[in-house]
Image 1 (cartoon, rainbow, N blue to C red):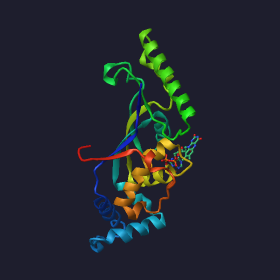
Image 2 (tube, helix red, strand yellow):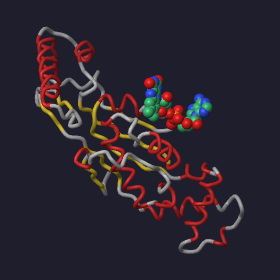
Image 3 (tube, protein in one colour):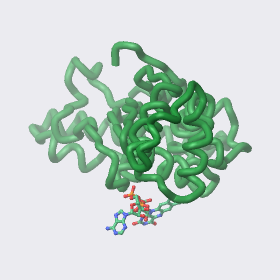
Image 4 (cartoon, rainbow, N blue to C red):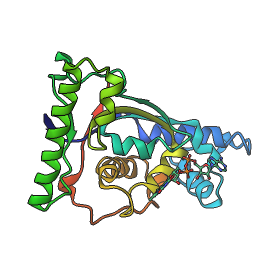
Length: 223
Ligand SMILES: Cc1cc2nc3c(=O)[nH]c(=O)nc-3n(C[C@H](O)[C@H](O)[C@H](O)COP(=O)(O)OP(=O)(O)OC[C@H]3O[C@@H](n4cnc5c(N)ncnc54)[C@H](O)[C@@H]3O)c2cc1C
């Protein structure tokens, strides 16, 4: 068994370009394209968001690849306007060489009590043992996946338009949200705040969530 850490890989984007493209689309409403200047998008976007004229944010999208666990995608895939491609526990057979003949479990670093953590770890070891044993007995991957817990590591690609990201990040980065989601989405929100402050600045997140728990953020040019 392997205990792994989460990552979030973001396609390289230019926040200013995204905001200027949204401005261009939005100005169609008022035929005020002539008012576009280098910085005119700032005021326009702020006004749109304040007034709830948020459909304009749907013109641009961003894709990320998340390496987290089954529990996190179980929650995030509830968002109906995002698109997902999720590692399949029906087709990925973890006893195969490709997976190192073992199951990867996402490290629940937020379980800080040593004895509780060891109890979790022992349970994962037993699950892996049973998975391999069932495979040896001829069980299909469909049968074996019945054993897999929320902690099973999983990769998923997620695409959403800017309006939906704003919605998801405002719901999924506060202290009511499962830590495995805060781990990946708080670093993403902080990146969005830095790159597109006019759109994401007003979203509050759990600032007490320990930075050492954050998933590694990777920005990839060739996504
Ligand atoms: C802290 C937390 C705890 C949760 N706990 C549970 C739980 O215990 N059990 C559970 O089942 N779920 C739970 N959820 C999931 C939650 O109920 C939503 O299914 C999920 O957050 C998706 O939210 P959404 O519908 O706002 O988002 P999206 O699907 O992303 O939709 C975006 C927005 O579009 C609009 N919209 C979308 N579809 C419709 C529609 N059919 N009709 C009208 N408007 C629509 C709404 O305004 C919606 O907010 C929880 C979510 C959070 C954040």
